[in-house]
Figure (cartoon, rainbow, N blue to C red):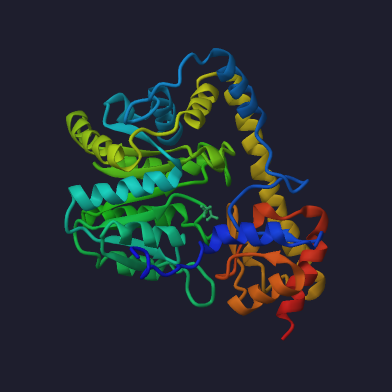
Length: 398
Ligand code: LMR
């Protein structure tokens, strides 16, 4: 038998939580696992701007023929402007361009293969901790993966340790940075920290690969791009992976982009030819629908305005949930212990709960979160914050 020696690998721990949660009959269950935004009703609705763009597409689209290797050209231009800024000098100089990918994960996979094929011998440096799929994507591409410290054993951002390690990274290696709302910790660098990282990256001639999955989920669509734009404007070469899953709510449509910033327009064309070649061998051409939706929204002033209002609503709800959870924990004497939840940013919070406590939360209280202690704050139902706080207090009592 050809398959006789094949064993079973465990299912993906984050996606697996979605399944376990769906099967749980407890009506008081909480889904704080996978990074998906939920509204006050516990639903992940389709944004109105998306619905309107889809209606327009249904009426106006005339073909389902393949889109090119770099995807929808309008999407590429508009997403580059969203990420780099409409007035970006790089875009004006044709030094930056986007390749459409199936989600941000597709962009990461494309970058991993690009590094493996076109920059042989370069190691990739990831934050410790990071999104678990970062680890496997780069390792599976055959790259040497190393780590720089990010969160210390007391669940605090450790910038000094991060900078010390980056200072010793071999020249030319790739360093993956989370643009904002670090996954899984929720701890972000300050602007001063970013400037220090920039100087090390410049001095060590590192290639920054910036993962930008949550634009709009913290301070605002423009503000959240600050670090990305700093690096793109200051350095000759940068790779940026952008995701439209969260901010457009287009999770299942798989929309993302790999944006390359090169030192010259001609060099960008060389790099992009390589990306098209790699993409052709990975997924041939990217899926059309989600990127067409994003292009329709970003290309229309009224739809863009509606969308940005909807992003604003998601953003302020997440901020309220953070402070709400810290308040709900106060009567249990836990507001200090979990004060970091109010300091962390974006969807995720490294709660500091142990794997054992996370397991107890699931088994006793039907609260689902990743075993690392990461909670998706955007998945909390605010009408039941008290119940969630009680459950957390229960597993913290020993
Ligand atoms: C997460 O970390 O939960 C999200 O990025 C979704 C995913 O694909 O894991």
